[in-house]
Image (cartoon, rainbow, N blue to C red):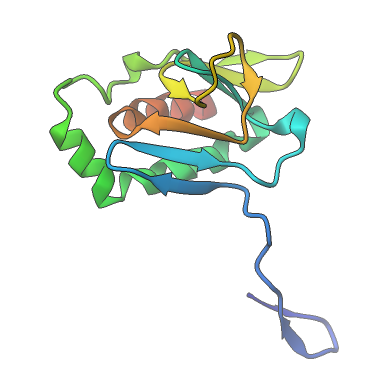
Length: 145
């Protein structure tokens, strides 16, 4: 990225050291990492039950979901999935805004690997690849509403 200053030369600005989102793929799931978050803005996950994201982060997360759906690994996982309805929006609940914490919650199959009940801050969480489409639909619907 190049930035031109008024009356001065252009210089190269380094890329941010901590990206807002990271993605790691297996044949069955995508794991989203969020290294640049303060603890109070870290996504909340209730393993196996749902995901909560700060409302201000939803547009960026929707872009992440879109990137996942462009990958061959996503389409291979969808083709191999025996559940024809795995990518349906009905797998996830509509987004619910909580005005106490500014998060939007989506009930659905998200995991962080911990056994704890309730929504917990999670620096990383996984979603089965065939389920990404349904979450993308729910996030887009929330943003459009």
